[in-house]
Amino acid sequence: MGYVAALSLKQEPIAAGEAATLEAMAPLPEPKRLARRASFVPAAATKRDAFPPEMRTIAIAVRDLPTSLRQQAGVAVYDAHDHEVAWLPLAAAKEQDGALHVTTPAPSEQKLRIVVASEFATARNSYWTSVDWPTDADQDRTIEVTAAVQDITVRCADKDRAIASLLRLRRKDDPRWAPRTAFSSGSALGLDGTIALRLGAGSYELVPWATGEHATVAIEVPGPASIDATFAR
Image (cartoon, rainbow, N blue to C red; front, top):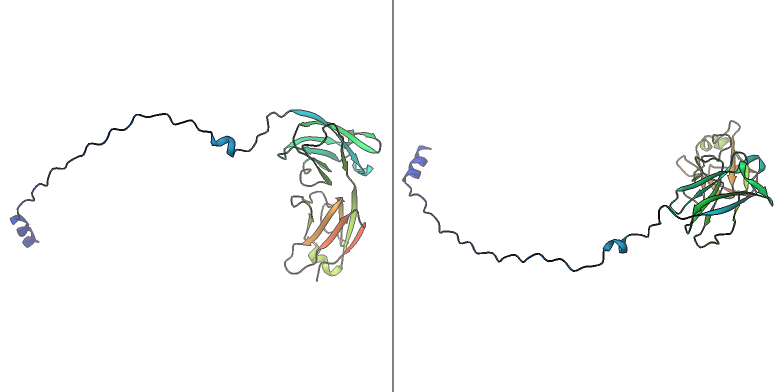
């Protein structure tokens, strides 16, 4: 270290470098307002419905609903955004010409969805029947809804009871449908190996949750009141 320090002391100081030359920058132009151009928002945004929407009164006629279900059932109305518009208990409906008649205000010039269900809380996805009413439909026409409901008993073989204790029930035409009120006894498999269902018109499937190769049981409503089901292959 002492030798290196001695050598450094004998060196001449470093000469100063040449002075830096700074070139003058061109003056910035005065700010100018940009030319007016069309906003991108109207082109990109979807059409928004006016709020609050203009309302109209719609008339609904429900046919073929079993008399025993009228005290608990109701009609739910949803707008184009799937927002609830009304819940109309059918116990208070007027019966005329073989149908139950109800009316309610609903948004004008919007597609509506009319469902008949057993409960208000689960009507959106657990219904007996669902009808889409298009925007261009006759505003003065009564919306006819057929709400046939059938009780069905599915009998499972003894060898399938373990598999049948955990089943999925789905509606073929609506993946959002949920069987929250479909099991009449409140649970899937009874002690006697039967499954009691209450379903609206449509095509359904019973599918085991268990892994492996299992058969799917198809259910058609209207159809047989009793079905013998085999899930094991």
